[in-house]
Length: 213
Image (cartoon, rainbow, N blue to C red; front, top):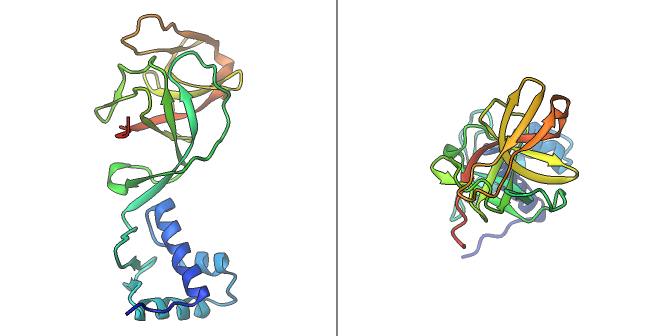
């Protein structure tokens, strides 16, 4: 028999699911209260009690102690937004945030859970470079950490003349070198003044293979 659910309960459940996908943890009562425009935390608890009674969630009693029940078990997944494409070649495509979906990734596969986004690799200038044993080949997904510390040898995302490109970072005296790591020997480094560090838009912390290719 199908269990009935009110509109407010459905909204509460949807927010909890989305929060799990974004953060990998359950929302707090305060976050639920604000998101759902409920006057009191007791009002939030009332909806949670109803959802638990109907079998949609389980409350553990601890902080953020909500677990989703049923076929879609979201509490271990993180949703990483895919914001378009990045060239692993000559930076020609215009860099713009073009939301085209989310990657659902097990939280155990990522050390960091927030301030991440992903891009689809285009080109072959980084196809020799591997992170977590997956090459940065054309069509694969690169996970970018916007706030990561950048060191020599890191794969980074740079915005050059409004175009996005992924390259290996190296700083040498007053020069920033962005160089390829490719089986295709036609790709050449990019040389920038040291004052151009603001073009670095994040570090590639992981790569996931695109199985549809």
